[in-house]
Image (cartoon, rainbow, N blue to C red; front, side, top):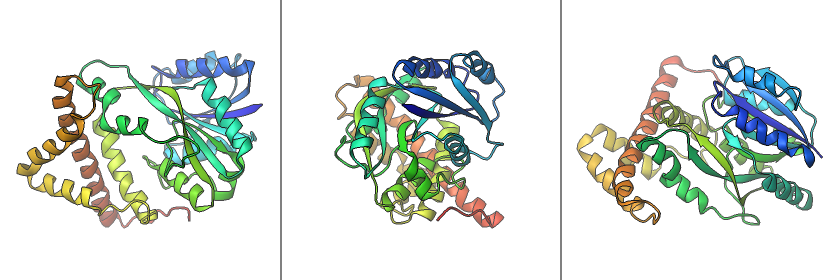
Length: 311
């Protein structure tokens, strides 16, 4: 069976080889077509792609700096495969996941997309590396119910989409250039009458220790997603109001740390030091996201942005 693997890459030299090697091993069972969408790499990313051209059917596209939503959209449109696998360049795809996902998509016509759960493996040492592997979001992600239970939204790090569903909703939206293109496409798939599900099968996510730019960009994208889908994600919910208050009144930060501490101490596999240090990193992460959201609000007011999203 032909599968299209859409892989977004930008300076992915540390992980892309491992990602493509895993895809190449699937040739015994599937006919993989790989579409690499490069975001302007300046490292050896494209050299790695060249090494796999003889082993894999590879197309290379360039997003021209237009961001994630645009890159994913041109990627799936460059293939005519019935099933589209969105795969991040730092993810090692699981053969068993693909086999089960395709089986379910063939059996259940109302299933629009299926995701693997992600098991983070940090490429870097130190506390940020530990946080990438063991943070609260990862813990809650592992608890997400699997098919036949329905998910509210899926990631796009390792997800199989039914092509006709992407065609029906108009694909990915370039409006989401920094992040949240996964949430947007998930919401539109559900609003079109299709289901989304996770499987209890894991793909390895080779994480770099990064927190500043990643979370600031995520916060900016939260404004965009709440603008387009206010029924699904409202920026002015209680949690965000509390976080904003703590940013403007720093003496409240210890209270917020105590809240995260109460969540982390319940994670049984953390060491005692991790239970006390990871909540502090969580606090920094959430502050960065709120700062990004406030920046986006101010930017929109100053620039009177004319950018519009897909309806």
